[in-house]
Image 1 (cartoon, rainbow, N blue to C red):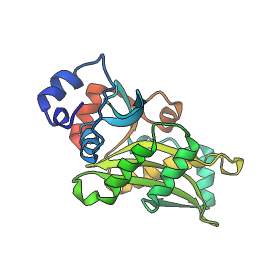
Image 2 (spheres, one colour):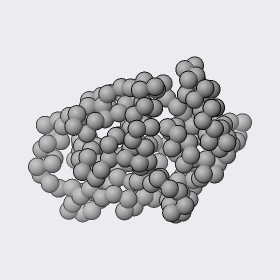
Image 3 (cartoon, rainbow, N blue to C red):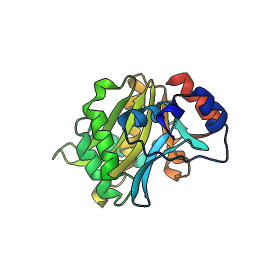
Image 4 (tube, helix red, strand yellow):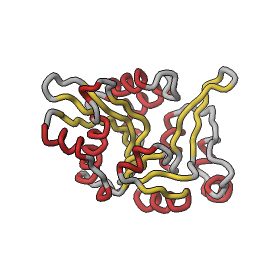
Length: 227
């Protein structure tokens, strides 16, 4: 897949969006421009090595998990954590630290050094990319300012798309990952967002959170309405 493919509505509509036999594409275009354009067209891009060559894997999924902010389900344990108020939620204060923690939590994942370089270059030159904003969500313990849970994602229009996240593997911080998601939902709701794209619907926690599953056609209608 090339940047030109992504910019060609005929190719997108007649050969990619409508092709329900394919979801993954690949590209050796590692430019920030390609990554941003793919995101704007509804693809969630990961990466892999093929024959020792690093390539990007833009995916236009068959189904998506999307959360309506008003449908959020908050467990009793998370409600208790909210009442204890021993946390601080920050947005995009330490993007690189969150990347580092995600890599420690998910070793040998698609979030490779090359992939992180693309994200960091976009972040550094954010003014070059209209209607695209990389975001890090950071949940700290209030007392010692320790980063407990977080994720990275991006904003396009009034849509937030989750990419990857982590939470601390320590019994002391049980349910802090869920707390982070609930607090993020509240942040998005109160800051003008209209849609939360959670990506693949197969992970049970997304449905437990209140997400609904949309097929590709339904998702793209929502996407084009809100981007």
